Length: 490
Image (cartoon, rainbow, N blue to C red; front, side):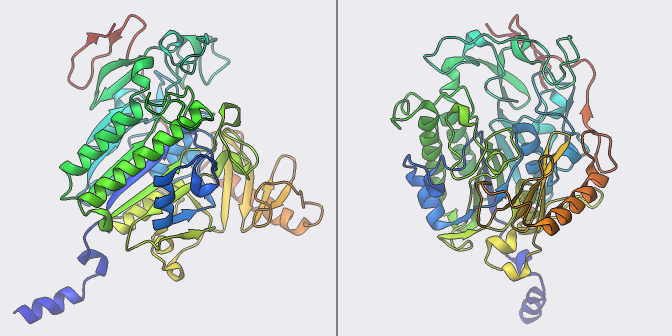
């Protein structure tokens, strides 16, 4: 009987016999390509340096130009315009968000027995119907959008120590509407107090003092979660508020870089990564845990980010706006000190994690991402490569890349990114064949996701609610949470 059992087990997939890996996805907000040591940063980041030495750098990894679209790609495995067709980002009290019909990476992993949690900034809709606990996560702790989307008087519009910067305007995302409630939410002076959510309930009104504690609190929550779920498998999505403006490093890190508050906060991010990796080593989980470190878009140069040697920054479809510093770490599985220039993206995490967990990508939803696991595990001969990538900004298709060639569709500039990742030498006049090829690829994508409009065959419906309300009103009254309890936070 034992012999028969062994023969039966030998016929099963090796992945089925393997223990499902724990997965931690660390997403930094507005981190520049060269804000950390492994990608040329000038400020020491020893924990990230070690992570890269023990793992793989992904040097041609793409996000989106701004926050919400990038996170939509990461959660769904799709081009942002396919699943979150909005012109920019979501604001407080938005009537729209990621549709609950979309299948998130958390839902894929949950089907494989994973415990799932989101700790940090969500930014895919702040109404209860859109929060992480409605999108496959067992628990959530964090703020629902960017840390600058609160009251100026409470520290959300200025760096610590700077004069309070007063917000202007009222309707975010729709300038044609003078109403305070535009489809994508409240902007400027109409923004309400910044809420901290635990589960489905607002538990704090975030002021400057609380902003300083975010990175440390998120890190300790993560460490606690790892300890409590050490039997695994678990999926932790850790989208930090750091290093988005306003810059609020913990007081222990203020001034530590000797450069700026933005770089101080990058140092705290490095500390956070080191704390998490140390706990994994302590619990002997490192050999069965994949940790990914990345950013949601390129860094904003006007706020101190460094994207060297890339041109451009956040909000742009230049490389500096969308190519992000990314490291994958899994001792014993990912070769230490390795690097890849293959075209990868945030859309690839869902199919990659699905493959590693023996899960399945949605059969009834088109997925744009590819399974990167062969690349990460040193089995590139099994990799379904991506040769083409499309650079969308909101509804607008602005550029297309195929192999090393990138064409900016508006100006017609052509660059060879293998030899010129800084996009300095326009070769369009010398390479008319490449220009024609890339324009043809762009037309193919326009037939799917369109250009300058959200009405296109491949664009799926937004999630939508009627009468969206701020989670905290200007009077301090908290909207009732999932527990049905309303309260006032002074």
